[in-house]
Length: 337
Image 1 (cartoon, rainbow, N blue to C red):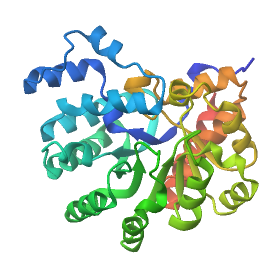
Image 2 (image 1 turned 180 degrees about the vertical axis):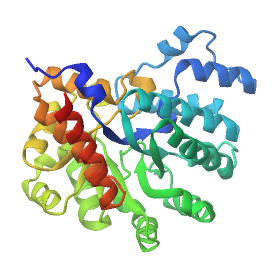
Image 3 (image 1 turned 180 degrees about the horizontal axis):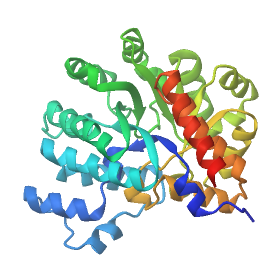
């Protein structure tokens, strides 16, 4: 049995690098925004909303996830959503966060791009007063066309100073990384950081990881534990300091396994593995909960939690001196216990 307490995990300074802002839509805020915007979501109580958050695969999850976004209509809605998450991040002693958002899920239903990014960005700035530094990662929906991704990229350019990186998410089936090679090459040329989802146990998982690493040239992979199927790719990732943003609790909802064994194997091989919450409102598990569940089920030691926390800052897209400041905070926390 692990001797790691929940208190230790909550208290340790950490970064969160894999959280979808649209996935932080708690039932209370969903109902509030539905009422404010006059939208009939088919649910009248918080419990009814919670009951709607049920799924057993990535596809069934997305079938619930995207319709819920209908309540997000105005810039203020996006601001409230992001602030709601940042307050919870503070409670989990998240010092730094990089926040995914999906503009196509909103512009495709008539919401102006400016409302999405300005609402989220304003919250990121205001979150500093909570003690949480954060930046935005714009993701393309991989089940839409590369032409749509290019159009979205061009919509983003006037706001480029508000974006720290570009990602790729949503339904992976028949949507490999190379489908988006052109737009990601452009993003890299323009100086943006690059990450991609390689979800667990998908069709052609290992090939998608290979494409992301060797053809696209990502700096991080979101999820990605299937890399263990190819020892050469594991070695490549280790040698090149590739980060992995793993999400054990969400894994357990969309498959039969949270992939804890694989996460620990990668960690103990020296790869830059991190633990994150993914879509915490839907899985009812924020970052400390994910770390604690992993610790208790797989008997993690304190040194594992410390390394996971340090990894989260080491692979963050921040200057080296800032990384060192955060890592010093971890050391001070451990020393003062």
